[in-house]
Amino acid sequence: MTIRDAQPDDLVALQAIFRHSSLSNERDRSALLENPHALELPSRGTGDRVRIAAVAGQVKGFATTRDVGGALELVDLFVDPSWMRRGTGRALVADAAAHAIAEGRDQLEVTANPHALAFYEREGFVVDEEVDTRFGSAPRMRLIVAR
Image 1 (cartoon, rainbow, N blue to C red):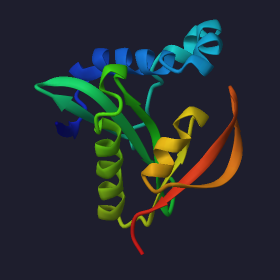
Image 2 (image 1 turned 30 degrees about the vertical axis):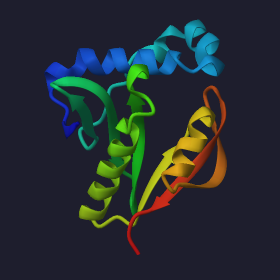
Image 3 (image 1 turned 90 degrees about the vertical axis):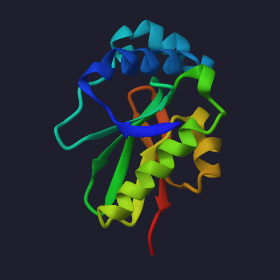
């Protein structure tokens, strides 16, 4: 597996992974299908960093990070459903944590989809609070990456 910066020609693959990964969660599927705009990959800002995980040149997942002051926020973490539970998400979190450290940040933060809570806890994230999102309440989590 290779982790690299996303390129413009990766956009179609990123959109497909975003959609398939989002719909793979049975709990969210009906709400997403009722709001098809939610299945479109959002535009990202110029300060956002999008990294992809690729195997044999094929995109299998991606993560987007954003500077939010003293922390780096994990805005997106999506993995192709056929590559879930194979270390893709873990590799992308490790890459984001390394980037946070390199940027002098001591934390990585994420607003986690509740179905991904166990994944983030296994990666060392802890819940700080519950926050409201457009599809309901979600845990806001942090990972200390440097002390």
